[in-house]
Image 1: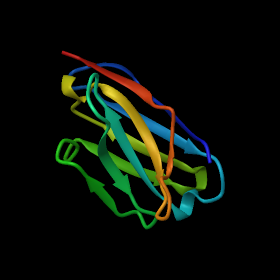
Image 2: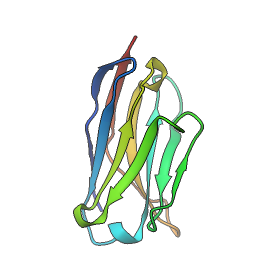
Image 3: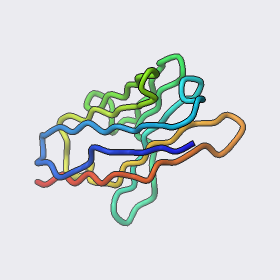
Amino acid sequence: VQLQASGGGVVQSGGSLRLSCAASGRIFSRSGMGWYRQPPGKQRELVATIGRDGGTYYTDSAKGRFTISRDNAKNTVYLQMNSLKPEDTAVYYCKMIVVDGPGYWGQGTLVTVSS
């Protein structure tokens, strides 16, 4: 399984970005997917997840501003980020969640929010 994240960039505070993560392999539709982020100098943290049934979970920092979605026909998961804040600056990673294993990580895409 390979995951390719894209869509990061520099945006002003209050702006929006949409991240994409394309997965190879045939197990995408049967797997939960997640977006994580690692702010500068901090540990990686969960942002949001989406189950294979489309059920979603958001951390408090993402609720009301971010939307995770998936397109199984394209083997792609998205993260729409609105009302971005400087504290959202981080490298964002997608992850394929595997119940009986450690899962698979993408390479990360950098999001920088300027004030």
